[in-house]
Image (cartoon, rainbow, N blue to C red; front, side, top):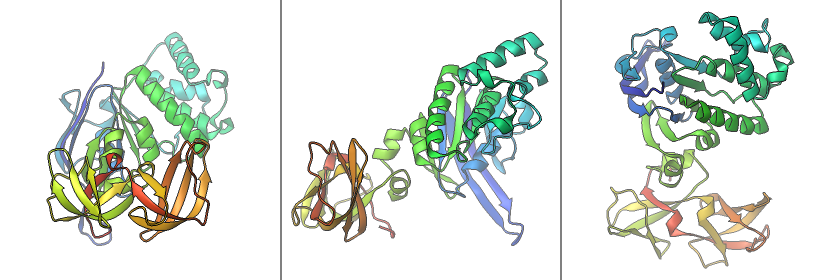
Length: 364
């Protein structure tokens, strides 16, 4: 049965062992995960995301607030009674057991009969392409294969909620990509409610139905991957979830349809902006690499020099050394668009429909 997850005003305070001072790791966090949804907690190290996951699993107790699974208050329920399963960063496989016995462990604890265990384990191992390795010990598996065993071991008990704590961080880039697809496929096919913790924006973007961005123990923004990427609430979220350039501007006018800004004496009407901005205020225009364009020197808002071109097949990444530092410009379909040579003098401008006007911060 599909179950929802709800956290209400969760706070976690630890005592610093050295100073004896209270440290707030999670500060008044509230959110809900719909049945069958995969939500990712994304943020830098120390932002509180793993602490939230541990409180949901029952391994940590909140200082304040309540936790609900399927409408039931589980705040004081021990981990083994919550109907959750955890996939850890370290695979946690039993070295003295083969693949089959590792996967079957949870079913045996539930006193399932041997024939049913045989059928279910075989089915789940086949789902992840490990059926032929059932008798192999974990020491003879690759990192990706071990992670699949750990994933299947958690899924086979059919938990109401699957919790994943940076499970791909020990894998190389290619295996990470393959496992992202595998996790998403299994989670959707089994319709399991899931929470994923990572500091890797690519994992968050490719896996999630929604993303919760955290900073210093608090939630900064909740949204779909597209919303988080294209419509960030501030410069922190904009910079954390992808490459970005910020151009200082002055707000000229705000209407129902757009925010008119002036950047280096040029005016642009931008359809997305921080609604707290008012005419006359200072701000920044957030530009993703795909929203930037190159032209002849003096034709745009900031001049620079192409320092490096990186060929990626269907696109080229041009790095431009400009006044604000190195700016990344993504040139899609390079066979039909001009690619400026390294060392060429160019000018930067942007497509207003792909930009957003945000509040200026001290770091901009």
